[in-house]
Image (cartoon, rainbow, N blue to C red; front, side):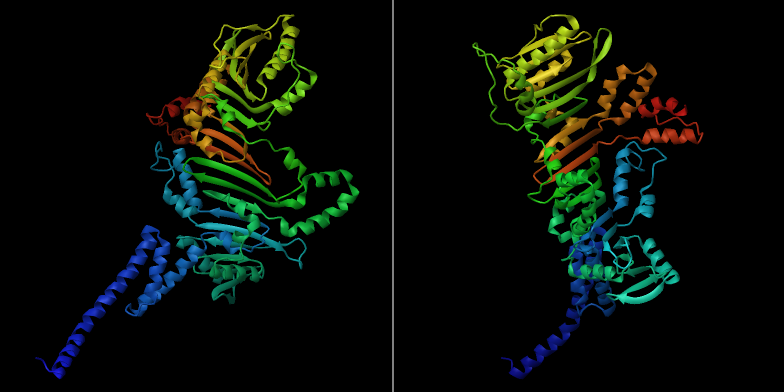
Length: 606
């Protein structure tokens, strides 16, 4: 048995022998943590995880002092970088006007890639643009400009601040850091950051990641404070601007206006004018300008193409009569089901909300009798969903091309609609051709539940009136009539690949939708053009490919939102390459795989 003194001595010797090895292990773990943080930040882009590791490394006594200092520095810069992800969180709560440019190099690169103008993209020519050039010219992370008020000391001079986030562009930051000491005067630091004055007009502060510029030092002080506290009193936290700021997505450019802080000034300025001009007073009461909460817009670039949004937000319970007069019922599935698959363009929307229809007069046989009031009732009560559309083709009537165009709508009282339109078209037919009634056609019914098709001879063409269930179709084309029948059986625009992304993007409150396929519209227009012009149009139609332009209007109790999108952008790389070569006189033929470029070559030398 070991004695107690010998056992104690053995333990102490063992601990002393193990201490150096444990310290080395702890030091290795600390260095690995620092290197892991650097890798996550620079290579993986996992900045939040990297920040946690940097902070742990900065407090780790087993890490050499030099590395702890570097960890502290990189962690502070990374925290600021994360805080600056939303530049709206750095400007005042009641900012009047705000403009933001976000990651322009990545957005423009995405756009050029879709157009076939980026080196390495599908269809790109040798003259395509290098991504390195975009990074060099536009590689900033973001730019924001905020107008925060007006300086009472200088009439009409706005107060504001500009924020530049250079991102990883050390060149830009290096130029700023070099130029400021040369062209500016050092001033008292703001938040511990170097600050310079330029010509007594501007103040510029360099934080770890940002360049902040303003005429007023207090504006820069506010940005630095929000950078440190997370922007609790910033525009991004303004509840009145929440829905407008939510418009932001894959933005190249975003802007918004916040008129409420200056509304008393606007009202005071208008008061005298309203007393002198009664018409302006009436207009002001109709618009209820005081209820305007926010106006916002964006230009976006994403993987599907280009987009432009414009939104208006009013206060709940507003009295804007014009806003309400322009509101229409929500677009339903019934509206889109009126449009057949494969159309060149369509416009669809709601006219009257679904509900019970006030009955009109009927004869002893039960048939609807058209009265004078039915003409107003048809528009203001009977018609529910309406769509105007055309196939990418034309029919030939009397040796002339005729677009395969149609008007489709659903009716609360289809029998009355049929009687009303039959009367109107019968009168039109009689005025042109004499007293000849519309005659039934030998044509199939539109649905299993029955219906009918009638033709009215209007001289140069016939106009067909077809009914089935609650659906009514007016068209001068038999081909369009057949397409309308197919749409009623399920072959509608919702199944069209060209418009699928559009249909999926229509949200709640949408009252109007417009879809246009440029390529199909070119096919529709070709028969109306001279042979030479038609060939040129066909060239550009090939380039347009599956591009689709669409628009949607969303209208709710207190907001209106217009969305425009150009999806599936045409790959114009081959065409641009051929044009550039010809302009330079190289005489090089376009790429053999590009039919569009080959066809377009003689057209570009005119």
